[in-house]
Length: 387
Image (tube, rainbow, N blue to C red):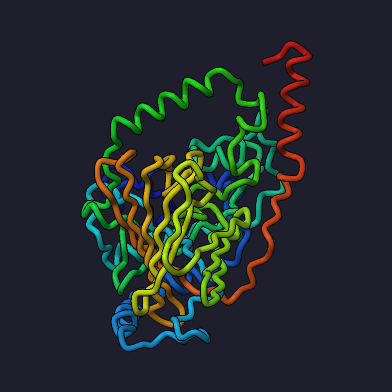
């Protein structure tokens, strides 16, 4: 879901421009909104109509642009990049593959209004929140904040713009199948899911560290942020640092500082029973494009993201293509081919935009104490005879 024209637009079964659902009360909205300056977004919303044609023209003329080279003569992808965007992974029903300028203005302008409302001062005479916290009715915000403001919009930076790819304002990151959907799951995938649920049903969710999510344990980034494929998490820290050498490419994800080491050259595959986090990645250059093929993905890793992640099978293969098309943009394409999970391959396209800011070390303050506190709290409840 995203915010448009002061209301929450949920990418669901109805049209993207018709599905306006309830917005929180003014007080609740002010509690949830991000603590960031909104001037940039307001200017973007106001100026988008006039700027639309130059944006498209500029991206179309990037074919003549020549990427800078590294010392070994390959395109230089190095630097800090972000894939944060309002565009969802899966296309909403009833929406075409490309949004028109009016739709983009509504969505991006609505996000600007949402942030601008945050600058309104809170009522100093407001009463205390209800016992147990203040629920908004929107699952995303309630889950993130835990009803008590733990993760309000101050911390959220999921994106403020629609993804522009080759001059087109995309309505989804998945482009194949043509309707922007994920393919149906296989029977094998359903069996794996049932077996996983049956196994986990033996334990309480706070029995062991292994029962807690990978992100909570700071093992892997949220969703499919680290990849492959490298997808936005729609939460925060959608930033990457790329470093190249003659025989390796390193891609570090800010979220949980996951780092992929991509070896260049003739692949020397790992044994089938060795399945590391983020898989086994080998790359090669095809002209201006870095092509990366990844296999042997860890069975507990969650990939793709955007509201529905999945665990890859042992047969999963992800192919990525990174092409620097101008000074500020890397066109990122991916194809997921996992016959053990999906009935057909699917592909997507995500623009990575250059960051002028420094990417600092990820350090989640909850990670210092959260896991031990959660488990010790559960043990205390057991001693007291609680649930």
